[in-house]
Image (cartoon, rainbow, N blue to C red; front, side):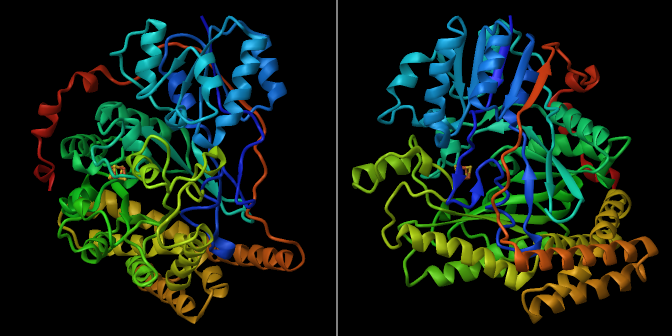
Length: 558
Ligand code: SF4
């Protein structure tokens, strides 16, 4: 038996004529930051996760052309062809289904991913009628059941890492995804993730499995910086966070001196933690959904958001915020205040989006009843897409607010990488004064290393700052560094000078050549997976029960 997993075929959709949809960091998180905007090579993680956790051989194709896809179908006898897709890819999926039926009629077709939420829309009948299986929910469990595999055996998540870089520099950093759980019980009206999992949390990996995969990333890539734990409101599940934290703290090779991860948490869930608990559990960054300061009070209650964010930042925890424009509560009278409140929080990075009513969500149903859903067009199914009529803003106005707000964040706080540096300086000071040995030793070492690696960028950030305010912030940071660590080492000085030269060259280039945010389509990537049960989690970890782990208090060490 053999399985072919694939992304949709090229061409990869381009958003607003400016951004390659597959390079999603080019239009969110660090957008509109001049020299400091970033780009990323982002492997298609779900396919690898499936391939690594089934017991039959498989091939993963990322971004084939139609010709390459046909050639692969002809090269082997695939029993199953699995396509993971987003709403944006819907028409391409239809073409691929037709190709499979033509070239490999015996193959069973399996569809999965958030795009499946759109399969009740007009024009999707052909897809529905011609595929064999539609997976809604957790894919590994689905595929294991389909293939007669053992659904209870442990999972691994050893994915190709995402490589993030500043295009004009040859340096990059790697982050790796780990699928902790799917879905969220929050049931926010617009949320596709929650709709996909029908308002439930589907646990995917245990703390021991997550730890093993984190360890694999750090062992495999010397420049690995952070694991992204995909789990929409992980911080609300304290037992899981504490169990994972204990494994990280007691890791014998890296521990808190390197291992850290991005966790998702609502304001309410995040506010239930002491910042030191989060640090001790390996949480390096938190993604918090603000949405709007005029909405979703249910996930904020009476928490003082500025105080929460400020305290986390003071302890060395990076903050990524998401915010949307186009909700009914946002009006021309309050939108400036909404934006100003967001900007004042000074997140390291932000995901700013227009409100989208994706098929399958509660928002979609409500707006359909109100006649505010635009005619279905899959190409508008993305963070900046136009699939609904907002009460108070046109789509053009919403887009302008999004990109102006990215700019305001940059003009108030400087480049994201330097905002992270500031947080790490805070963390260093905090851990220096902590009496907890985990913080005072391992975590202190982590902050020191991050700071030493980033400080050479202070000069270029000051030189090319968008205004005097940011320039002074950058110079102050350099002064703070010298106070804490002394003058730059020779290697740091060389690095700083080198970066400055490259920046000058890039700025000159931009004077004569148009600068484009549109990155090139990646070539085909093909991966072959053996289908072995390649799980390397020590049996002792699998056997440990949640209760035995959580009964050991982390305070015991400090
Ligand atoms: S809290 Fe976040 S993940 Fe959960 S339903 Fe709301 S938007 Fe979705």
